[in-house]
Image 1: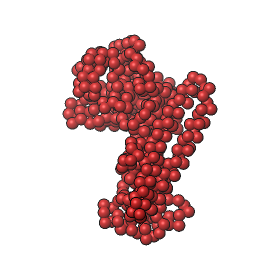
Image 2: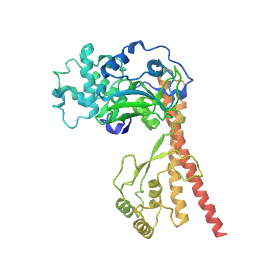
Image 3: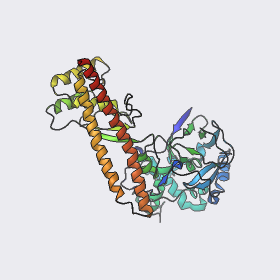
Image 4: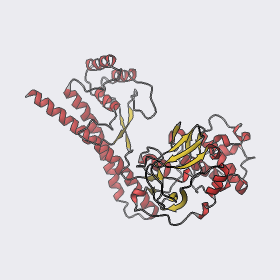
Length: 430
């Protein structure tokens, strides 16, 4: 059985106020094609070492080089879509269970798999060339800092190791490891792949064979950079965890906060109704909470379509918010009980109230859009910045533009939906 692997996401990590990776790159879509400038001599011995350590072929069609994105993987032979281009046995992957028993036995349950794997990296960094993993450790990039205090508990193992060293190791794991059946795993060679949001190529885990593998989703000629998809990540996620964004990222999303207004005289009744119809939250699924909620909105592809991209739970909340009598709320509760239990998931019978609910949402979206436009306008005042500051302004602008596209698509759909209902209502009256 193949299991999809994804890069580590923030909910699995120790919260931190410190983002460490400051290098900001754009995907290949931001630049014209550029072949590798030269073979990465620093890693010339890496793949032969990994092949010998694994006892099997890792890849006969990929080589390590450098591109505008840094260290990258390139096709060294023709690759056809459907070809297995890489197989890395679990036995040559680093995971938390590689931590020395004398260290792991002293760690409490609150220490995450990411921190444990960072300690594994630190141990082998300290061993230097004496480490059996030295050829891999030496190929890992230099990254900035991340906060932890776990080192203070093990001076006998980490003498002369600074907090900065641990921050570096922690960020290596955070930005390069993959979620796996062992918790998280560093997968040598596979972690040299760069990300393409349009790629359908993922790192897969074959549990029966005990290997991680990559299947090409398109053809590559020798010299082409081979890219994979780290996950279906928005630009906000990519920027936070990996330091880059993509133009026109189809996975962009915006969190929109909506709640029952405090001045609403039916607020208590509405909150109680919402609370009674709350289902246990699922990861990545919007739902109600008694104090309102943040709803993840994605781009609505067509203003005349079904509004896919705007969560049904958000539209349902708007219908509840716009009720003006206890009878309307009771009718919604009865309707939910008679159906699948979902509250206000179908259009209101009162068409004027249905329009009002969606106009309420549109006003909320338009307010957020105004804030985004103001933020973009403020960035134009920094157009004279140079160097890394100009680069950061460019990335910030790209992030805002992508999320603004999502918000404007939702607002356009809500406008069309309301206008369509008004026209139907007028036609029925005439």
